Structures are given as structure tokens and as C-alpha cells.
Length: 163
Image 1 (cartoon, helix red, strand yellow):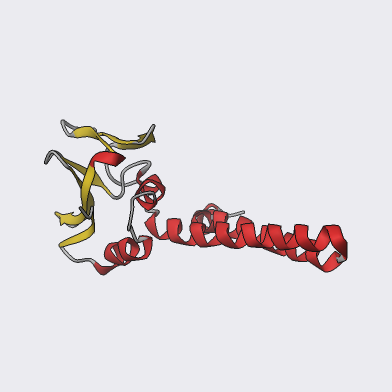
Image 2: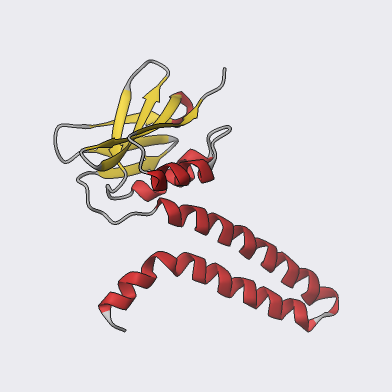
């Protein structure tokens, strides 16, 4: 396969795997019977949920074009900046998430309850995993966050913790 084609298809691989699983579940369902019908229906339901999550995460994915590394471990978001910036905020302490555009580059601004802020470039390595971490927050809407990424506004509040 040509490298250009592989690069264009790479963002769609999780969604394609979910679609193939959905087809396999449909095949199991079509076999009929007391065993295969419920099994096929379960596989199709799981694949549909997987595809929905993959679609939402795909909109968060960006090419790695910014310095630094994002890591999510034990309920904490860590950003290791290539320069002097970096830090850690626990998900339970997050108070606000904003999307900022600085010098044409999108950044997530995470603020804790104590007022500490962490600035993470959207194109940093591992930043796509923030979608799963943000989805665990109460009232967080992945669709709204994806729309904010696509909108191109200079400043937008994506989520705030309700008291």
C-alpha cells in the first residue's frame, strides 16, 4: 500500500474495525437459533457503541505537530512540555476546560478548583486520549468539544463543573 494512502486511512482504522465487527455480528445474527441470534445482537450492539465512541474520538485526533507529551494515568492528566511548561491536574479537581487559540495553534486550558491552570496543545503527542478522560467528567459533551475544535474561535469554554 502506498504511504500516502496509508496515512489517509490511518485515522479511520478504529471506525473500520468497529464496522467489521458490526458486520460479523450481523452474520452471527443471520445464522438464527437460540444461541446465535442473541449472541449476534450483543455483538452488533457492542460494535455500534464502539463505532460511536470511535467516531467521537476521531474528531479529537490531530497530527502530532506540537511539542510535549500528554499522559493520563490514575485519574490524572499530565503534560510533559518540551520547554519549561508542563504539569499535572487530577480529573476530580478539574473545574473548567477551555479551548484557546494562541498563535494559530489550539490549546486545551484546564483549570483546577484551586486556580492552577495547565495549557496543553491539541496537537501534542497523546492529546487525543484527552477525549476519553474528558468524557468521564459529569456533563461533558464530546460533540460540543469537537464542534469547538472545528469552529476556529479564539476562546471558548467547553465545560465547567456545576456546584
